[in-house]
Image (cartoon, rainbow, N blue to C red; front, side, top):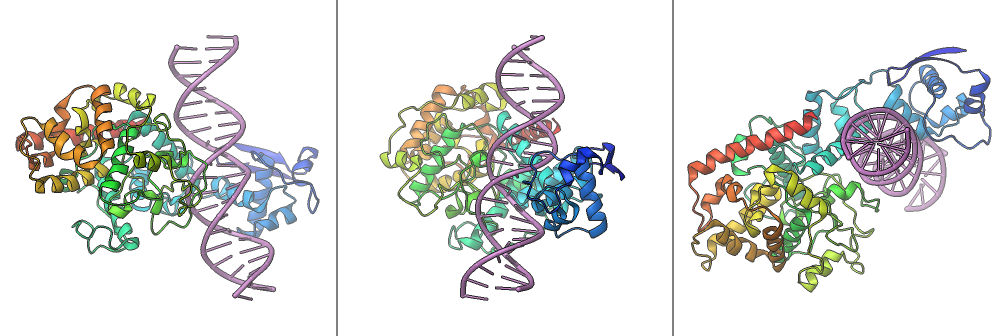
Length: 450
DNA sequence: AACCGCAGCAACCGCCGCAGA
DNA sequence: GTCTGCGGCGGTTGCTGCGGT
């Protein structure tokens, strides 16, 4: 029997299913031969396609029995869904599709199947692979995962969802109060300029260890335990077990859910967290990423070392930023860093820092002890980093030691003008904010275009 | 030419939800 | 109510090709 098949990679081939060579593939109907694994051959594809043409989709376990294909039902289904389906689009994602994926990810998180449903002809696996690749690429480049506008959307969506699970998370947050809904409406991403002004995009990379400190510290400062899960680029890189069913809660997707703030920081799952364990990353929220949870989210017997560190409440023994973090600082022009702990300002990490910044600014504004300072760096050092934690001192020291001194980016955040003791001209702020967004967007677009 | 690192892709694995027995 | 099988989903791994050194 000759079957002409056109596989997903546009390869057309003729296979003789009945040929002796195929006997080992499809000739074990009802036999006890172990199921085959690994790449599919064109002959197997032909068999599967033939089967589906005759019997339709579904009942995948019957494929093996009826067609003799030495593949498990799951494998058949996967092969069909990802490669043989006639309605599949071939080739690379178009820019429009890429944009859509980013938007969808901001809305849904790692719900690849749902995203695939929104992208006709695309499979969840394709989207997943694309996203993971993209994550790595942006991470490597020190860019935010989301472009600035979508970044904020992700934040809002996460907050909305968090409120569903933690209704009392952050009642005073005007952005989230009264928005307890999972039904996220479609969002026009092009009209988020206001949001950009309110929540400027991340401009520079924070070494993950810094952010880590900030995050944990902020939790402690607010009387919260660190979350069980955390947003993490690394979450997909650690094969640890995870909690499933977080779809509605995105529990692991935002370490700051208890704060009503999406927080991004490296995985808690590194039991022996040295600062080399964390690759640098931008702290853009990755909704839905399911962070490893040490197997048991409620377990207290094996605390993440971060907790241990914070419990000890002192600088780590090896307070060196990861090599990659340093590398990022060197490579990324946008990483023109500021003085010391001022990297806590929102411009660095987008959502997280915007939130943290807002929170800290509120604190600072009510803290009489923080009077006007002659320099912004001082203001930040005192009203910001000090408010957070001792670890932030460490962070600050790391930055002051490793980051290039370039305070320009400090002035790129509009809200800085509202910060006590911050002498930033508003017009400069607005202007440079726009530049910042543009620069970031450009960098993002450039990366996306790669 | 050999080696290395990375990106992209395909496939597998484990878990979950659901339906039917 | 419990068990079992199936389909679906998301995370992860392994392979391959390519470019740089």
